[in-house]
Length: 148
Image 1: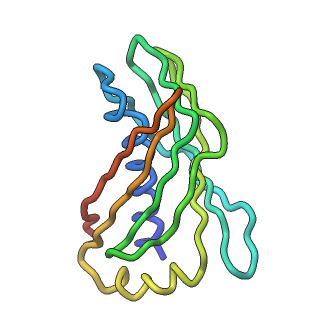
Image 2: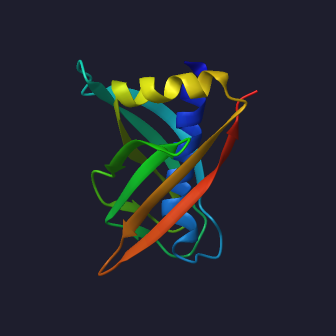
């Protein structure tokens, strides 16, 4: 279970940094730090993990995003799909906490658990889009997380 928690935390740091940084062409990439994870809406079929991340914006312009929608894939299988629940504003030269939801069905976790427990590394992919004013900016991030 520690491996799954590690993978999940790394994925969400990547979601937020992908959604808020390279998309908008700012001179400096915002810094993202995971502050807290808590569970909401748990029932017999699944739960929503809420990742509270602190985003520090070192730029002279605010970061404004109406919504970030994303899908998370582990070893080529879709783990979940979600979106932020409210607009994101990170003022220039400031920091703010953002809540990023990760709804997870227990069946999706169990379907990937065997692969995660026996693998030396796990491939991930995050596809999504960030909606700003009148348009959406697509993004995709993929890589591997080393587990041993």
